[in-house]
Length: 107
Image (cartoon, rainbow, N blue to C red; front, side):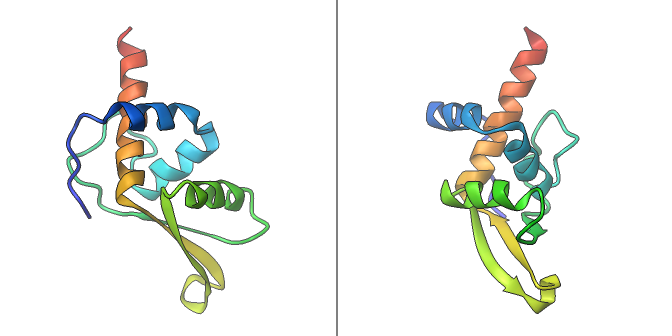
């Protein structure tokens, strides 16, 4: 895992603001911070396993299309489901989303 600076750039903040709540939840869950309001210095996990036809698969595919996650197509080790891994850029966007949420609570 990479260590990301605590302050996200403007582009990351903008992209984070365009993601749906479901997409943000998938990104945050993938990184182990779904119930957190602040990002840690490093994330301890980076994946999300889901299959076609599930409610969250389209959100993972959208994040994949944005370059925020990579996709390993259905593999036996994942029970025949896809495994999505958060990219470095995805980590930055997640950090920006958490930063946006924290700013909203302070104002």
